[in-house]
Amino acid sequence: MSAENTIDHSTCMSMAGILNRIGDKWTVMVVGRLARSGTLRFNTLKRQINGVSQRMLTLTLRNLERDGLVTRTIYPEIPPRVEYNLTELGRSLKDPINALWDWSAENGAAVIEARAIYDARHSAPENEPVRRSAYAR
Image 1 (cartoon, one colour):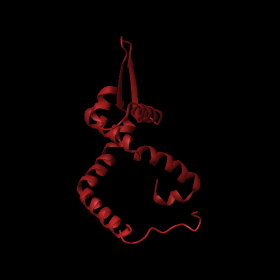
Image 2: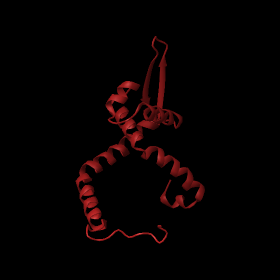
Image 3: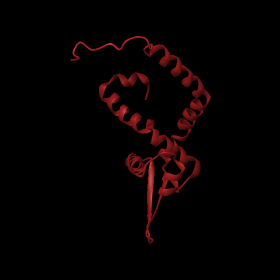
Image 4: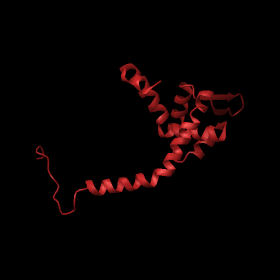
């Protein structure tokens, strides 16, 4: 689909949902980890993705499965063993995610510097009084 096709409102709306899913921080981490490691169990994924909660990982995996990016395989053992793997569609995200990761690694310092410059320029000087709203009592 070309950029020109995004002018149509319905196309924009469907694209927004897809981009929200694949651009989500945890989605990027899960897909990246599964792309590098192959099949993984839930707790292994949780240990390998720094900062993700059990609830957020569960929701992310469920949504990725719903979108056809991840398969969930349950083995009838006691306790049940559940493994996650990327589908062919999920594996097709490997190159775009790697490109974003590489861009972030190459440009992260420049972004942090730009933020510091912006914040310094837009912060109120210490000697300037705080402006009050016309509605403040």
